[in-house]
Amino acid sequence: MITSFAGMLEVVKGLKPQRVAVAAAQDDAVLEAVQSAKTQGIADFILVGDSRKIQDVAAKLAISLDGLEIIHEPDERQAALRAVALVSGGQANVLMKGMINTADLLRAVLDKEVGLRTGRVLSHAAVFEIPGFERLIAVTDGGMNIAPSLQQKADIIQNSVDLTRVLGIEPAKVAVLAAVEVVNPDMPATMEAAALAKMAERGQIKGAVVDGPLALDNAVSLEAAKHKGIKSPVAGLADILVVPTIEVGNALGKSLIYFAGARMAGLILGAAKPVVVTSRADTHESKVMSIALGALLGQR
Image (tube, rainbow, N blue to C red; front, side):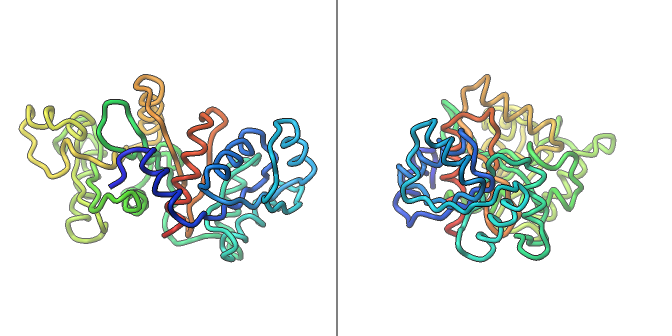
């Protein structure tokens, strides 16, 4: 089982480099991450975008474009479609966002002709390495689905379970978070958590042990779970934390980064291939780790 980002990088570097198609690649932070990932042997890249702007940015930052394929497409939306087509056509294994709105990229991902549709909802999963915590832990969905339905939550869980499997976590222990540990009809999140646990028990969610509702402390601390008398195969041992709404996931993820000093790698899941969508606020390291995580998942 991979328990750290250093361990993940070691595994990825031992595999055949995956090809990443970057949509609208004329972005300084993205090109810096591309150079670092390529230099470390994490992945190879196809840069789709305005070739002159790509070359200008590379020259400004003293980034070498040697060995990188560049496809000239100055229109951002067309660049997204061409990058997606490279992935769906098998010339690349991972899609990455460059200087383009996320919504425009996802429209290309869902395009009926060249897209990467699977029938499953798209969701965001962030994998965190937290100082003092002995394992990697995933949080979903703090980036895409605002207030997911029960079925959408089932897809979100399955997406994240498929991700943690490539980290060697199988079966994944999934905690469906709420404010309390008991089912309360006045708190819909607790009702849905209990339903998701039953769905997993009946095989509707595969490769995971799902339990909920669980408060955050009982999901990650054996001591807290024991103190409250909670007996569960997930309590205190969660690999995946499923949040009820995007606000909870966003706040939890940013709290881990800014208060606990966590490192993060994130992907959009649910498409036929992994999609790397980073924020300009993400650190350079986070962008590179996200590429590495996408490359690892792209192998499958």
